Length: 397
Image (tube, rainbow, N blue to C red; front, side, top):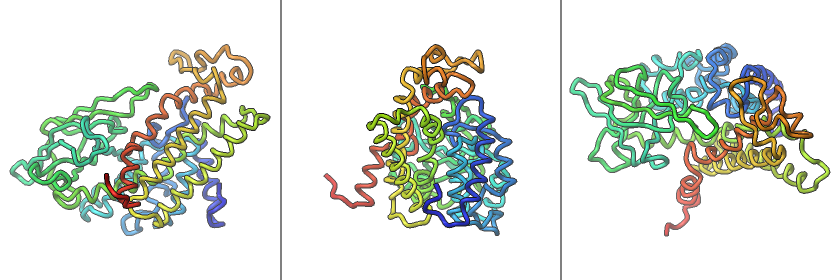
């Protein structure tokens, strides 16, 4: 997939694919969504040793000072192979760039080294039980404690990886009397502090990476406030560009698609047409991401990029389900590593898929997980409204 990249990058992409395959092989079953659910602290250390964390950050801040395209090809390859990136990915993608843009020198010196070393795990405390994509409706409070610090009370939900994280980058309301968009601030919260309770949430696939995080009078030092007090909304919008416009929104289940391709009926023109559509869709999504990476996209265009890319991921999940047919109803039997569940007795290709590769189980898991692609990180409905309002400037009703 190096058709539109400079000549010196294919070797880097090939190296990253090899590393990604080796990392993915350590995961017993699932190869998909490794950037989100694949927590592997050892793999995070390997990324750090290779200089693949903070690749584009300034050298003066400990980063690699490398180009955005170099980071693009590395993470396209790693995520595309299903590498277990989740221990390091949020911090590298989002937290580090935010601290570099809005944090103080002291904050950068405090938190960037752990991100670069792959030893600090971060989560993002944004969505709430009654305020998913509507950031202005957040109700978690951070009140002055009288000595320069803050006391945080409230709840966050769908907080990916919180149960394994050290730090939460929290958005909280610090001025209850300000207009909804104007009274928010960002704080770094130690998840081991007294008053923090983390409850993993099981999804349809059986995964528990989403979490509810409750804050009951949690004390946060004053110097943990990042950026402008009550001015967080602008910072959040910048964070959203990192979160929504990246390659992770396109390649979460690309390995699954490649693994299912050998079982397609190439004699059926309808199947060939669908394969062509998926191949074209991948390339179109990739070009959208590259526009974001190179700074060529219009303001707020990441809403369009994420919408297109995550809907492509859902089409991949549906395609793989149709390719496997009955075998796609397989489900992991946790009592035995080699069990293929209902697929074990299937004939033909289904029988071939019921072995140690667990492909049938992966397809089944992806089929029930795929609706989340267009929900997490901003729902498609909200993103289409953002695109119409801020990018296309269409008239409001």
